[in-house]
Image 1 (cartoon, rainbow, N blue to C red):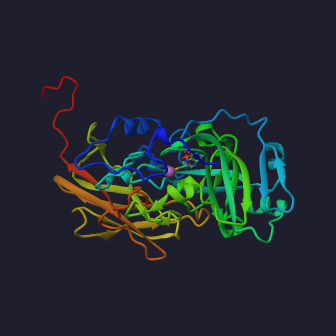
Image 2: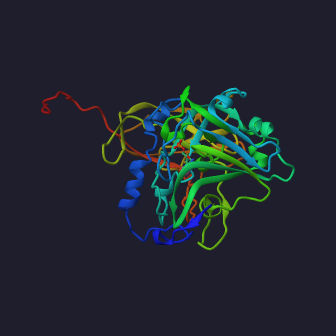
Image 3: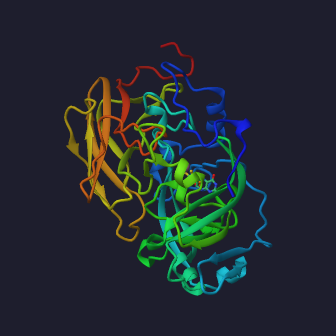
Length: 384
Ligand SMILES: Nc1nc2c(c(=O)[nH]1)N[C@H]1C(S)=C(S)[C@@H](COP(=O)(O)O)O[C@H]1N2
Ligand SMILES: [Mo]
């Protein structure tokens, strides 16, 4: 159960919003060093290589033991289950390539800035998850007629805004039990057992949903006859303008395209340097609402747009699509921008969609590029 521990912060209060001009504080820097993003050059890989997948952990990575692990399925079910890893491996197995994105991706670009994990745009990655379809597991347990939600509990424990809790989230039963939505109880990532930071030995994978739904270190599934209202469901992960309002829940991933950084970087600013002439531009685009149907690129900060080629992979409907185009760079400072449109007509906005938690900010990406001719002498002496 969630319980109040008010001495450690506002009790279930709203997240704090930074004051005017307030920079990233030591607490946020601490979060940023624990929770790393995808190095953007790794957008080149269809499947993010081990160790480069972004990580977000609210509390500590728990001390788990795959040998002794038990997953329980209870609550409003006909036959409560308790299964170990061997029993799960005996059930039907599927592998799905899924793009995962943190709901807070883009938060640090908001003004005023919600104080939390300060992602820019790099909290996204793609992995191949192997496990049991949740629908099959629920079938084995038998869903009671009055069940409306499935609640998922992780083995990690902590305090958040004064509330002591296990990490716990729910899904509507219509999503959890729908074989077509491909929700998985995963024990494998990229062909190997889950690493500690990604949920070893078991995690939920909910294709198309923002990261918070993919409960790691999964130890308990409970079907309920009433909607779950714990901290991570009703206090966190809501789209609110004002602290007091209930807000809309954060669910499916909004469309976004990212550019794999062209040329080479400036160490501090990450601005790019390219040579004049044709420059291949490539990247990834995704949406939880449906396939991305259009990616556009601008070289003047979003005044004029031209279409890039989107290369969807029908074998992997839950994974990002590649996109590509060729840009003819001319000397000077250029402001590239890129934006995606999905099959539902959702398009990335040119102004950031602000909310108090800093969720689902899918503002178009802007990348500063200096186009500079080749230097005449590149020898190690540094003198021509
Ligand atoms: N048990 C548990 N599950 C969790 C979290 C957590 O802190 N505890 N973080 C969630 C959030 S906010 C995100 S974005 C994803 C990140 O998954 P990854 O670290 O495997 O990329 O895990 C989700 N599942
Ligand atoms: Mo997240």
